[in-house]
Length: 225
Image 1: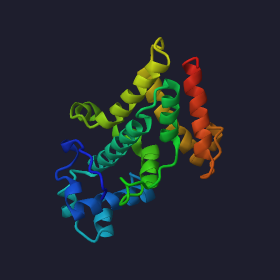
Image 2: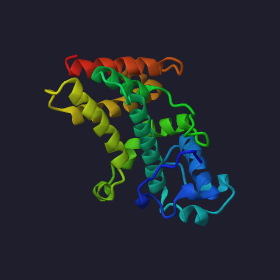
Image 3: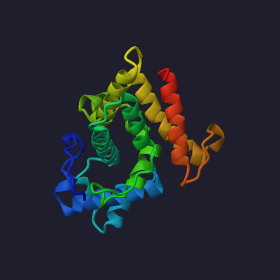
Image 4: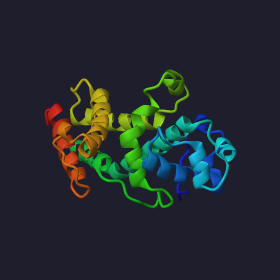
């Protein structure tokens, strides 16, 4: 599925999909179907038909479709955390590091050496439209106890640390970062589906750049920079 295998929480799956061709196919096709159909209309039956296998074979890897969604979201945030670490390595200026983080988070995701078998643009769209469904649930406390949100927390923690470098006196670094990241998703979603709620006009060639500009203004103005 990828050249780089990320270690994801074992509670997400019954069998690690990264260890077999079928598991990789389940993940790859799962991304495409969820992106096309939406999570509500996505089923393991449809996934099995797409990969020309059986529902039972899909259930051998994932307990249910919510667990598969969590797996995809966790893979995305693990990948983003890796990219953030690489992009900010050896950058000394805190403001520059924060700008790099905002740029990486807001840009349209494209295939790189770690996502050759996946569709990162589709995965990004899933995060924009479905991410909040992973934790706005009755079982959120149990899932949190199992550590399934750790990759997203790692991204927030990394950027919050940079926020503290930019302005050590700012009292809400964690709240700012989690708010900004969710706002990025909301603004992209609004631009495409609810345009009256944003000033970012939907244009695949430009709206990611506009989103970056807005997030820089929002973040640095909040930090009095």
